[in-house]
Image (cartoon, rainbow, N blue to C red):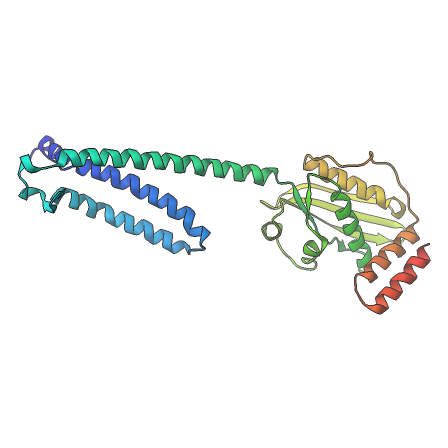
Length: 297
């Protein structure tokens, strides 16, 4: 059989249109199950096996289309049907309709998928969210945990004043305290785009605060700075950190412009000790916290 004759026979038996119809429908099925399976928590191997089954079915379908023809009386071998009794032309029209319908559905799936992906990207990029981690105590004796925790909480409260910024609660962010968890993992677990971490080193009336703003999508540092100041300017340090974070996230910080503020170092130190004791939720700690507050007044 010459090539032209063979090709014409393929067309007459609708093998080519059957192949196109199968590929379009198979692709459509693949897109649907790849979307539906994750919703029901189906394992990934089910999708892979579905692809294998569809791939195996393709040559089987072509062989079927070559050998058989679907007639009003049922499935018959093409060779057993007289040319005048063949309904291959009607079958070709039906296949055309199937292909057009499947392509239309495929186009809809593509557009929906594209729109969904674009929307997800917009949400991901536009979602300004942050978790303020517990700052590490880097003091010589590491006996100023109350101070590093207090500064972290003050920063959290300050950032929470930004309307466009979603700030994770202290309970959630401080649960990673003392753990060597990667920023990318924290981002996935807390569903935040950024984390603010750092360290505090206090010696006498001097303090060193190191702060780092990290993008949780890839773990990169977007901003980092070290402040070496006297303790009485701790509020100004907090304001500057909050301002830098809002600047990096392209947000507006509520309130008046940053002004130089001073604080009694000893009173502030006692206040942070009292706050640290109060969170221990014991009767003794409450009494000690009350005494610290009285001392600070």
